[in-house]
Image (cartoon, rainbow, N blue to C red):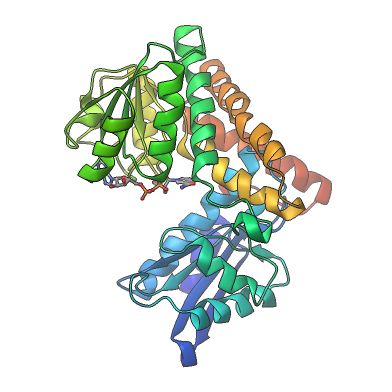
Length: 360
Ligand code: NAD
């Protein structure tokens, strides 16, 4: 009973529990909404403390993918998978191939990709059992590591925010504080430095800071204070929940725009608080959609040039959201959810099937 209640609460269509004892596979695939197309979303491998925790995570993540695909203009629904296990010690070919057999059984309703704890190599094992997998290497016709494209999308979204706040979309001379210098953060730094932004950076990994300091002209900040840097833009590119009750009053920026997922600890509360403080927030799932756009491109035969054009269109999507937010005096997260739901509703009207979860 509880599972159906959980599904009904946010409008999930289908959950698939996958068990294959011979290889120790315990996985859950969640399909949130397929109005716009097959549900695409990565497969996360994580040492969940309980099955409940894994289920809660996959339900939340799959719903997020519905909104991300919808706002990015993709003809895809939202889905996600989780494999319960330690990605450091329990990854094996047979585990991912067993997972691939379950993905294949859904006949294309769910398309998988890499996510936290899984890699391009793991997806190549999955590919042995199903063609419903993206995020493959360039040599196998895939788009390879999506992070550089995610960074390009974040850069484009930042420029749209700058246009809104400063009346000019150049980032030249703007002070930008970047938290996290991993795959996306490092790539983003390159774009920002080439545009002549003034950069302040922080990462808990000193080697990552050293690499950026050697390659670019940047200032460094303490990891506990990077969000409080006096700057034009704060770019969270590390963890989620970075905007919370403790950090929000310490922000000294005009724009928050970065790659990290789930930047707001409480979407409604902190989205509203940023809006009331006059800080322009580029909703995370909008500005970091470059990776999804890149893997979605693999479905039609990967074309880097086409993927780049679509990723750079994040500029226009962010601009549209900021416009609606201003016009309706609503937080940007509310504006983007509204636009995503509106697109799904319109397509559903043609298909005459979908009722928005919010009005159910
Ligand atoms: P990553 O693991 O390569 O990089 C994260 C970096 O953050 C690491 O260098 C880590 O040391 C650093 N970090 C961790 N905690 C920190 C802290 N408290 N302060 C400062 N730095 C800290 O990950 P990534 O692929 O670059 O992704 C970054 C974020 O963007 C994640 O939230 C991810 O979910 C999100 N995202 C990534 C992609 C993508 O294409 N890689 C796409 C969409 C969203």
